[in-house]
Length: 168
Image (cartoon, rainbow, N blue to C red):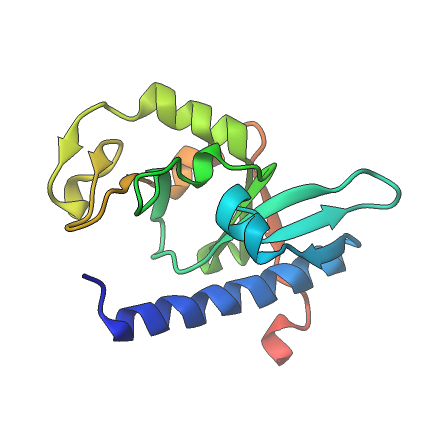
């Protein structure tokens, strides 16, 4: 069971990542609209983006990463399809070591995981690199990647933090 302190920490760091993301996207001249609770819960979409007159697309913002550590979700804690199978077009990983967000196409990342993650379950999160892992008392199925893995994706981009990030 997750402790209340850990839940509070994750929530706070997630909010920080979202603020950073909105500022970075606006600096790149995207129109940003917060997704609804339903968008978040059912589609795994935190924000909708639009550039100029283009159609909008969804983004799932991922914060709370340790350096060079990226967790990808095949199934969520309830055992339902995880965010790799959601409705977001792109995933934005808050990566301070990159000075911004590592942006990847969700489908390309999902395909990479399906092709490269071994269909082997491990019982220790430290052994979860490119293997499947479920946390104690949860129905999730996740795997750990590193930054080099997502850098290999064609869609990989970095959206630098907004210039005013360090001032606020």
